[in-house]
Image (tube, rainbow, N blue to C red):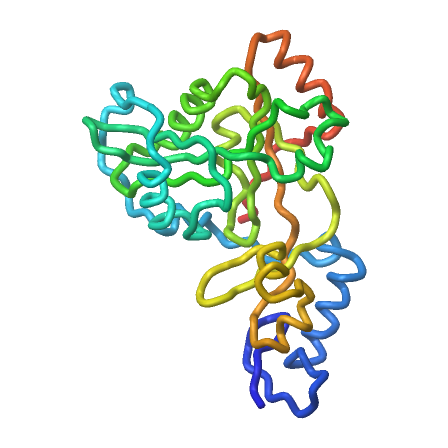
Length: 269
C-alpha cells in the first residue's frame, strides 16, 4: 500500500500500518517541530509572495483617479478565487471593497469577524466589539502597482464606525512577510502564540484544521494520513494591527499592544 509522507509529501511504501514518514530524517524533523516549534528549525521562505508570483508587470493606470467603493461579495469572490493564494472566500465575510479604474475593478479586499473574538481573546486588550479582520485581498495583474495599498487604506476608512481595530495575518507558507501591511503603516507583532499548525490539502485545496475536524472528524495528522490526506507542519501566522479614529483613540488602542510591537519582518535573501 502506498501513501504520502506526513512531513514532506513524497510517496511512501507502507510496509507496516504505523509508518507515516518516508525516512528517518523526516521523522526526526517532525519530532523537532513538535518538541521545539518553528524557532528550532525554520522552514524555508519562498523568495516571493504568491500574489507577486501570479502577476506579470502591471500596466500603467492613473492611481490618483482610482476610486475605492463597496462591492457585492460575489464580485469580490471572482477576483479572490482567481488570484488569492487560498483560492477561496472566507467562511464568513461581511464587507467587501473594490478599487476601480474607469469603472473597471482592479482589486478587492474582504473583511469579516476575527474568529477568536467570541471566546474573549481580544477583551484583555480592550478590542472586544471593536475589531475586524482583513481576511482576503488580491489585485488584477493589470492594476497599478500601488493599487493594493490605496485599496486597503481607503477600504478601512469606509468601514462602519464601530470598528476601531483592523487586524491581518501573514502566512509564511505562501511566502508572505506582510510587505503590503508595512506599506500601509500597520504595526507588526509577529506570532501571538508559539508553535506550529498543520497545512492540509484536500481535493487540490488547502483547508484549515477546524474545517478538517468538521469534515473528517479529526485534525490529527496521523489520522488524516491514514485517510490519504496530505498535511505538514508550518509556522503559525504572523499578525499586523492598524487603528482607526482620532489620534487620541488610536494612541490609546495601540498602547494595549505596545510591548508586543516588533520591527518589521523582512524577506531573507
